[in-house]
Amino acid sequence: MCGCHRTRRERHQKPRRRSQGKSQSARRPSKEIKSTPPETLQRIAEAIASQGSAAYTTPSGPILDLLTKLAEEDDRASFSRAFILLARAAPANAAFVGGAVPAKISNFLIKHRGVKATALIKWTESNPDWTEELKNALRDPDLFVRVVENFASAIKHTKKPAPFQESGAGFLVTWISLYIECALGRLALPC
Image 1 (cartoon, rainbow, N blue to C red):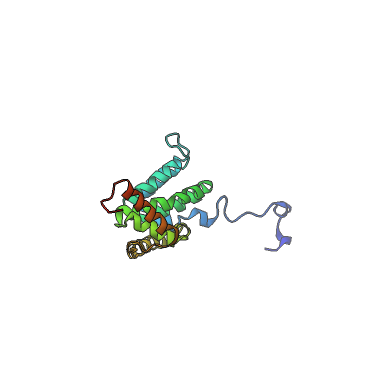
Image 2: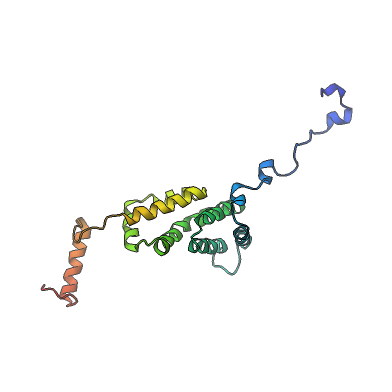
């Protein structure tokens, strides 16, 4: 309609917005919400609503506790979705919670994927960017599940070093430790 056919009042009013309040995309449930079981979604909502509870030593305690439980339940997709929803609801807490994820996943790998702690430590030393890769995958549930499984497989297939194949300072520390143990009589070797 051209401006000449509107009344004086209509010409001076601000144009109406198509939708009042939130945008169309903000009102639609996200993929994370649609694909999360209702009982898990309820647990996530309760944890997010409990942010700052005095029952925890950190404001993010409720969501950290939930992430631990989801890892224990081997529900890594919901683990990721819980983080995504937290990041949207409380963006200021997302970096802190994201920083705790590598430790939670390390525990998961040891308890649920049969990864030996020593192999995990050795693998993390030779893969220093693993925490960033893990945190980057956290916002995509399918990718997060794949990355965690790839880590488990890679750690299990890490070659164990042969005894005394260390070099440099590690080699020296090993020999000094053996010498001290022998000198103290804790080893049954001739010194």
